[in-house]
Amino acid sequence: MSTLVDYGTQEMPVLKIDPRRHIPIYLQIVDGIRTAVAAGVFLPGEAIPTLKAMSLKAHVNPNTVQKAYDELAREGVIYSRRGKGLFVAENGKAAAQTSARQAVHRALSEGIRSGRAAGMSVKEVRSLFTAALDESSKKGS
View (cartoon, rainbow, N blue to C red):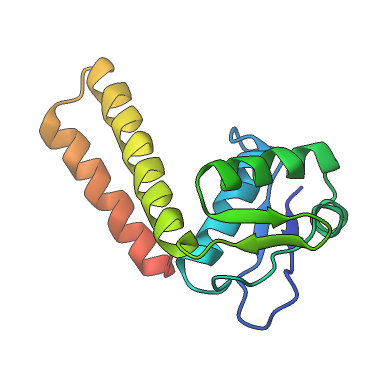
């Protein structure tokens, strides 16, 4: 079952958490927050949902959210103010965009390796990539 998390702002895209996906839940949270910061939904200095609020809304263990927030802090996307909460870093948008590029590169590289290991030609892999990109573009994602 997929959990949808409303961050509480009109323009915030809904975070989709699906425990059935092969991607760990904490990484799904990282990706959702990173995407929101990269898109400018959360601005530098703006608070993000607290650990408790996110864990309640997402129906996940607070330790899972903490792991996600620790990763975002390591990436330089967010920072913590003791007793105040978690906030988007001044260079959070740039850090989020860089991390997103790296994540896309890793995923594409893994897909290419898998395809090549399965005996696909470069042309076949390129064709699959183009088809997936076209499909994603039609969905508006």
